[in-house]
Amino acid sequence: MLQRSKIAEDLLVTMAQLFGPMPGGLGISVVFVGALLAATTGIVGATVVAMGLISLPAMLRNNYSQSLATGTICASGTLGQIIPPSIVLIILADQLSNAADQAQATRQSLYKEATGDFSMPSDLSVVSTSAGDMFLGAFIPGIVLVLLYMAYILISAVLRPHTAPAVHYEGKLLERDFVVKVLLALIPPLALIFVVLGSIIAGIATVNQAGAIGAVGATIMAAYRLHEGRKGAFYPAILSVVSVAVIYVLLQNYNLNIRSVEAVNNRVGIVMAIIAVAVFVVSVIWSLWRTYKVDDTLMGVMQETAKTTSLVFIILLGAAMLTAAFRGFGGEEVVKHFLSGLPGGFWTQFVVVMAVIFLLGFFLDFIEIAVVVVPIVAPILLADPSANITAVWLGVMIGLNIQTSFLTPPFGFALFYLRGVASKAVKTIEMYKGVVPFIILQLVGLVIVGF
Image (cartoon, rainbow, N blue to C red; front, side, top):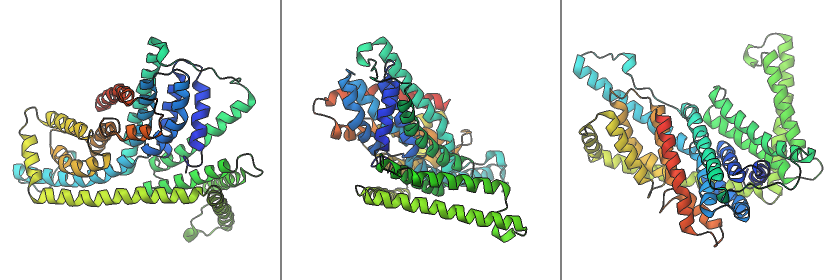
């Protein structure tokens, strides 16, 4: 919805004008916007395509090197795979939850054989994970990657000014109109990020509920963007904000649980809350109607969402069948014996597994790796008593590693997305050269996060 309603485009253009006057500012703005889109959409393809169509021509027009420009766009687009809410993290949380249960059973069995005691101390238990835990665990690693990308672009611009020259904005940055433009482009996406992630981290909403909040918020934002310049463009957004603010105030001052309401003033609060909820529903329906009528936006969004969801579930079903057959024929025992036979204990096993995942990323999509490889190796790594790691830590490390699969040729999907929208003047070899430093930066971030 954010991409089709041109909100992502507004964000890119505005941030480019804001950061452009500093060395490498245009590239830094692409990374910044990539991080914001990652925290609101989590979809690599839409982000890379949007930035490729909007930012790449501007960067090349302002004499950015092809390798730096394409590498920055591809790497920024992949941030959606590690910055919450991310499809990768949700899939990994599901796989690692099952893996933690298997590892717990293995440890329990080993403890019983060693001591003869059925009850294992809690400090030896395997700590499981959930999507919310994974989101919380991946938040700081995502910021680390963003800072590494920005630092690389800034250092490159300082050491080699011809690769990323400053781009001066023709107008004045402190003009009232420009400040309003920046605030309108920046505050709504930031508010959406805060609401979605904040509701998960604070335990107010589940991941599914937070996803619904994000979808509704994006629709309300799209409604005023699609009616930009027309009378009453912001009416649905104003109604939604006011109604949510009223509901929040009522929650702080009244008991709104209908089953336990006795006092008369609480009944008044419930009536007021019902009215506020009704106003909010009206604003959402109004927004949906606008997105349906203008450029058939809603239909396009629904179709793309259905395609993506169907694709993911087909892959999950096939991967589950493959993993079950692999286990049924004893493949898991072969892998377990191989890893346990390596010298150096857990850390050698971990490095080997991460190296295999990295190499598989050259040829496989992130979903295949997450649903085929992780269920096989994760129970083995988590069951090791000497590991002293949690499923969240392991999931974040694997997520950072899988993220490189979008950049590593020959099947780096971010490269394919950008190649599809880039002009013929952009050489493919320059795109490959451009992503190499960012792949290295991701591996550096992996090491930093690991420690």
